[in-house]
Length: 286
Image: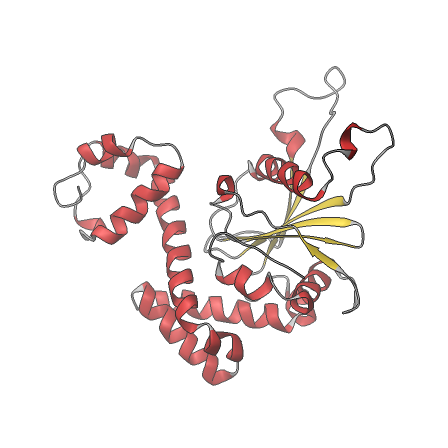
């Protein structure tokens, strides 16, 4: 199995995205299948800058199926099917011979499966299905659905979908680790919360070898992941956006240049005019 990720992994992809045995274990747990270690896997994860925001993704081909599997920390939105459609088109471009598309013989392509594993703070049901067709302006008898895409969203916070954790030791321990970070966050700054979670999990034998080997990377990756998700949620709040643009938000950001730069970088990725926002920020943030 070869991988060539141009961008840094998330903790999720670092743990699950590069080892065939662990990928099989995770897939079997989610889909209740029993593929063994002899089952071939072809990694098809994108490393294109257009999907820089998708650091928590794993795409792979297994038994004639093209699986796109993503961990999601922030609130799931109803645009996920469209994002998946854009993603899967690029993956097919990556794995298919472009010359074969123009030949008369019908190609055989792996059937897609779309899975989102939700691991955020908000309340979510154990399972939700999102459909692309629900986004269409018109559909029905007069406007039939000619294209659809279904995304299966599963809540993997500790204690949710417990059958997954029973079938995958790695997933069960990952859930414990994230839960420990979330618990520590209530009384500690984020970076200290992560450090304490790593220390406690190693002592308790939870992801012990992984956390010992990649402890520094895990701290940096998870700190950025959680910070970016918090920044996104903050800026999705219309009142906060309005307050920033009016220059009225002061103490809550605590004046940390690093935190504000993180928020600005997220906004820049989303197409905001950063120069304009900076010009309207209070002096302590600009």
